[in-house]
Image (cartoon, rainbow, N blue to C red):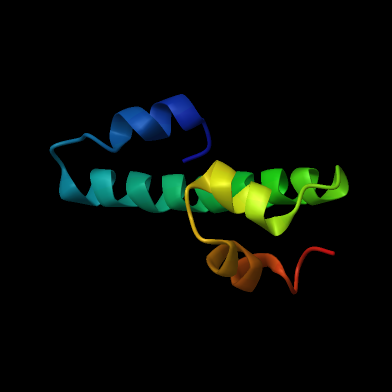
Length: 71
């Protein structure tokens, strides 16, 4: 499932196979977008605390998740 709007609509399907596949696709998209924005923030000099605040998570959580991939 490639189109985000179609995937979002499919996530509410009454067919569990369709709905679960859509949820998995949305999870992949979300992870990709989050990494992109964390990288953007770090490239612009944001601290791990600022990023954590933006994501409503702890600084430790975001740093642990991305420290090896970004910086």
